[in-house]
Image (cartoon, rainbow, N blue to C red; front, side, top):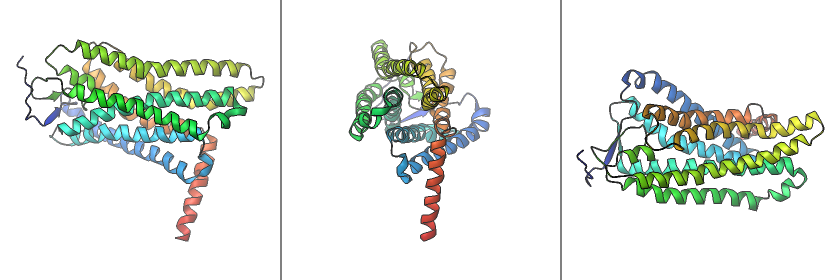
Length: 316
C-alpha cells in the first residue's frame, strides 16, 4: 500500500453510506431529517421549560437540562454534516471540521457517561436518604459534579483528538464512516496502531465502564432501600423516580459497550455505522420522551410554563 501523509491534504472524504445510493438519497435522508428535527424540538423544550419555571430548579432537572444540552450538541455535531452529505454529491469535510467533529464526539459522549453516573448518585440520595436530600444535593455539590464531568472528559478529548489526527494516513483521506470517529480514523493509518488501540481500550474502560460500575453499585443500594419500604405505593413511587434514568442508561450503555468495547477491527463496518447512527440520533430523540412522557410533575410544570409564556405575550 502506498502510504502518504500529504500536508497539503486539507479535507477528508466521508464515504458514509455511499455503497447504498438507493438508501442514502431517499428514505435515509428523510428519516434522519425528521428524527433530527424532533430531537431539536424535544430537547430544546426541556431546556426552555426548565429556565421558564422556577419550580423545576432542582438537582434532578438541572442534570436533565445538561443531558438535553449534551444531546443537542452531540447530535448536531455529526448529523448536520451527514444530512449535507446525503443531500448531494459532495462527501467532503474540511480538516478543521473533522478535528472539531472528532473532539466533540469524544468529549460530549464521555461527558454523558459521567453525567449519567452523577444522575444515578442523585437518585441514590433521593431514595436512600430522602430526608437529607436537599442538604446533600446542594447547589455547590451538583454544580461541582457537573463541572468535574465536563473538565475530565474534555481534557481527555484534547489529548486524544490530536493524537488520532496526527497518525500517518494512506490513500486520499477517505473515512469509511459518516463522521470523523476515532476507530474509523485509526483504521486509515498505515502504521501499526496496536499501541493506540490499546490506549483507546483502556480509556474506554475508564470513561465508559467506570461510571457504569458506579451506576450499578448505586442501584444496588436503591433496590435494597426499595425492598425495605413496606407500602406498595411507596415502592412504586421510588421505582418511578428511577425508571426513566434506568431506561436511558440501558439505551446509552448497551449501544456504547457493543460499539467500543470490542477489539478494533473485529466488528462489521456497516454494522458499526448503523449502531453509531442509532447512538447519534435515536437515543437523543428518545431521552426527552422517556423523561417527560410519564412524569406527571414535569407535565404540570410544563403547562404552568406555557401559561406564563402566554401571559407574557399578552402583555407585550
